[in-house]
Image 1 (cartoon, helix red, strand yellow):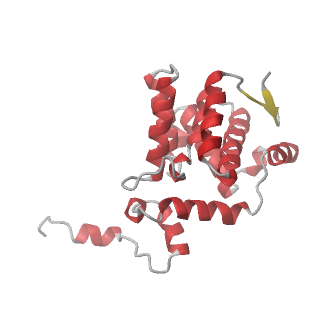
Image 2 (tube, helix red, strand yellow):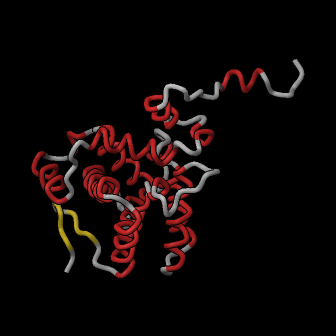
Length: 212
């Protein structure tokens, strides 16, 4: 029997159960509950906006989107978004989903910290950004009723979430600071580490090997 939260059914499939188990094992409570809320907020906004979204793909996108911040899946040489995207792609292909499906979820996770662009791509890409922007930034909360918000937070609480998610971001990126260049993620490193030196895009251009 499918679990239902705020009118959103969690697909009762082997793929979804295994995705839940994988993320529950790899992530702490903050990231796990955040990831489930991302799926739920995204699904609620998809309904509000009339988007037709594959629920399994939306679920894996939401659940895996911050997997690259966890010790089990984090690398040292690439952006955390790519770590989660690669894990999701492999997981979906191993569970019989198509290359197109896996690619859309890869894009959803890889681009979830890039404003605007995901919302112009496939619904399975957009739905993850819709969920992330709701849970982290509180954007467009008017699309979700107070009763729906209460139901989601009752199922997946967010105690001291603002501080805890910022710390999770920092802990997941502190050992690979160069990967934050060109993203909003360097704001997190600068917040926690006064010694962090941002790479200046203008200076990179000026110091390029091209002659004047």
